[in-house]
Each structure stands twice: as structure tokens, then as C-alpha cells.
Length: 486
Image 1 (cartoon, rainbow, N blue to C red):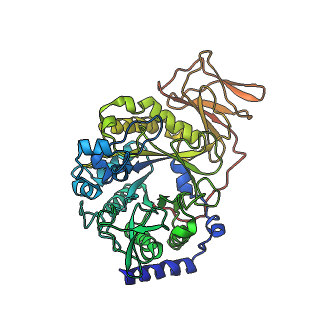
Image 2: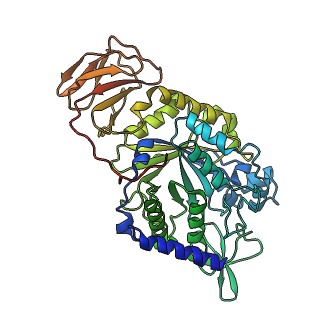
Image 3: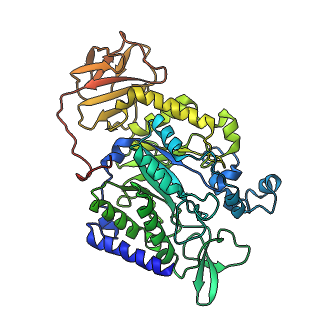
């Protein structure tokens, strides 16, 4: 394994040396968010792994994390775990119990398409270190242990065959990893730096191959191998928060990924989780990540909200049986529209159970959003924020990239029929999407007022009024002229 790690690491360095991006903050900070990401608006986050077997975390006011069950079964969740599963069941047993009877990547991708999603990002290595690809650097992977299939390759192939983009979620840190120090074997903790005694009972090390250097001998070559195997359009880093980017060598991974893509005339993206104090900081990745509404209003930098249809990150059996915990169809659509109007993408999580089955109430919400997007998607896809600090009381406003159209997504139809649009230009035409009706418009204190008295809502959740302008402020492309994946 060490020789293979050296060979792949040498290939990584050669790719960095040949390409336009160096492994430093200034250079990778010059990489722009690709146009496909800015246009996509809506993606599927697939939170599935050994934790899905247990599928539980206590309800909380905001986010709760069933996908931390493997680690918390020793402490916070101990009483529940012993009562439900027994004291002898541990993280390794959950891998054995994980079943893929209902996990079918083509059907998963088909659901993403039906929902109107444009990219799919599966969890491929969470903090426990179970890798869902054919890894040469660990035996704790889905080909050798548990599922006996290369999940990353299957999902990537299914997404690309359907014309969707595919992203690879990987945790940089792991809860435990065995490392050598002379003749002694130790446990490396989640921060990637601290070493502690390793015992026969230390969890999350089964199947892992001890290394002298976690990052150079394991992390970097294993992620580079994943990239070569499954050809992702995005790297979605996580588990980075304890240590600096230099510890994880995330700038090396970024430069490799960017340069590899440039050589193939591909547009790719990376999120902002490079290491401690990088989230929401310009120059670290192509877009900010907002987890459960960290970003709530207008943000000019590319960004992405990630959350589930409920409070839970990962399958929670209570929510799959009770709609009280899950957003309604109307709330789910409103979430997407609010994020897009404020300049972001929504990476909406689905959480299959231990057999790979997506809960029916999650599937229903996705299909409901997709039905709306099939009718009104031009107000969402390939749009940009209209620059409004606070969205109007009646709904949301987006604009076309060429700045010649403004879309008023009317969630609450004005009782007086007057739609005051908070922009400062007079449109040359107004029409109702789907209704195909035109409407008169006047100006009030420099803002258009659309007379809706002759119209009716075309959808009880949200109707769309389009304002057409002279094409005077065409927007320049925000990414290099590279050939996108078809």
C-alpha cells in the first residue's frame, strides 16, 4: 500500500506541476465557481451509510444528526442504543447489517430528475471512515466489507448517464485512525494531529491499514483514487474543522482536482470546508456552505444551503412514520425559492434507511417540487439574485443572467391586485407564465406596479409573473470557457 500511495502522490504532484493552479490559497482562490453550478440551483444530498441501520437521533429544535449515531452510541445515545440494539452491537456490526436491497442508483438519479434536481452528491466517506468505493488504502470499504459494490462508481455513472452532475462528499478527518510511531501503534484522533493509545476496543479502526502519516500515506492518495475511479464534478469536503488546511493538505487536493479538470476541459467545483476557519471565507473553494440556515439572506458570493426535509441529517425512523417532523410540500418549495432568490443553491438531503429505501414522505415532497419546476423552472434555473436585500412580502424575485427578464414568484397573491416590484426599471412587457396573459404596468416612486386584477393564480403555492426589459445589462460569464459535461 505504501508504494501505491507514493505512486499516486507522485501523480498528484505531477498534475499540480503541469496545471495552472498551485497548492496555495492565493492560487486556488482564483478558481471561479463554474457556470453549471451557478445555473443548477437544486441538488440532491444522499446521506446513507452504516448509521442508517440504527436510524435515530433525538428530536431537536433545529438540526439533529443521526449520521453521528456510530460515534454517539458510546455516550449520548447509550441508553437508547443498549435498549434498542443491545450493548454488544457496535459500529462494525452496523456495517454488517447495512443492506442494499433497495439502493438502486439509477432509480435514485431518476428521482433526482423527477424533483428537478441538477446534481447528486452522495456521502462516500463519513467520519467513521467507511469508504463507498473500491479503495486500495483501506479494507473498511464497500467493496470488501458489507455491500460488496462500488457505490461511488455506480452513482457517478448513473448521474452522468442521465445528464446530471455528480459530486463526491468525503470527510477529511476520521474519528479514529491507526498510525505507527516507531514500533508503537497509536490512534490518531479526529483532528488529524493528536495521538492516543490504541486498544483492542478502539472503534473505527477495523479494516484500516496503519500508516506513518495519515494525510500523505492515506488521505490524499485515497481521495485522488476516488476521483480517478468515479470522475466527480464536485468535491464536497467535510470533517475539516479541527485543523488547518495544511494538516489535511486540502490545497493539494484542490490544485490536483482543478488541474485535472482543466486538462480535460471540464468545469468542477469544491466547497469551502478546507480546514479550520475556512468556512464562509473567500478564496477557500468555489462556494460557501450554509448548514441548516447559517446563511439566511442575500449573499453575493456563490453559496449552497444544505439541509434535510426534516431536522435530521441521516435517516431517522421516527420521521419516516410521522409527517409532523417533515416539511410540507409548500414549505419545501418555499425553502428552494427563498434560497435561489437570495443567490444560493439548495442541496436538499434524502436519507435512505438501512436497506437503501428513501422514506415515502421524502419522495412525495421531492416529486411535488419537481412538478412545480416542470411548469415554472425558467424562474429558477440559470437565474441570478435580483440584488434585493429583503424579499417582498408577496414572494420572491429572480432575474435572468442577461438581465433582460425579472421573475416575480408570487407566493401570496395581493388582495388589491397591485404587485409592487422592488426594482428600479420600467419593463416593456409583462406576462404571466403558464397563463400567457399580459398585464398593464405603471410606475410608483420609480418601481413597477403590475396590475393583476385581470389575472388569477395559476398555482396555489406560487405563480410567476415575468417582466421583460430591453437587454441593456448583459452579464459576463462567471467561469472560463471550458467545455461542460453533456
